[in-house]
Image 1 (cartoon, rainbow, N blue to C red):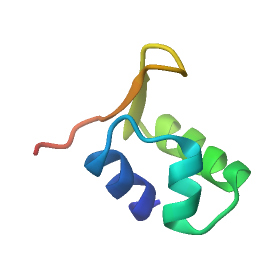
Image 2 (cartoon, one colour; image 1 turned 45 degrees about the vertical axis):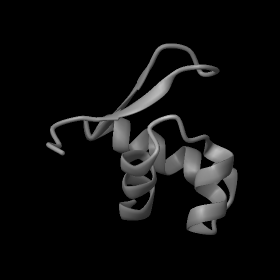
Image 3 (cartoon, rainbow, N blue to C red; image 1 turned 30 degrees about the horizontal axis):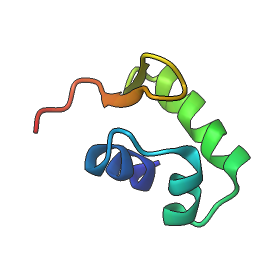
Amino acid sequence: MIKILLEIGLDPKTTTDKMKSAVGISESGVHKILVSLKKMGLVSRVDADFGGHWELVGFEP
């Protein structure tokens, strides 16, 4: 989970494909982690799946 959060922090426009390469897990694994992070209120998706971006919730730069 930490690596996914770091990827989003480094590049809010990152894709699940880039995340899976950076973390070294399957795309479905990334999806499961993102669902968990959303449920915990740590990340949110802004705008559309294509052209949108991720936001870290409750984190200060």
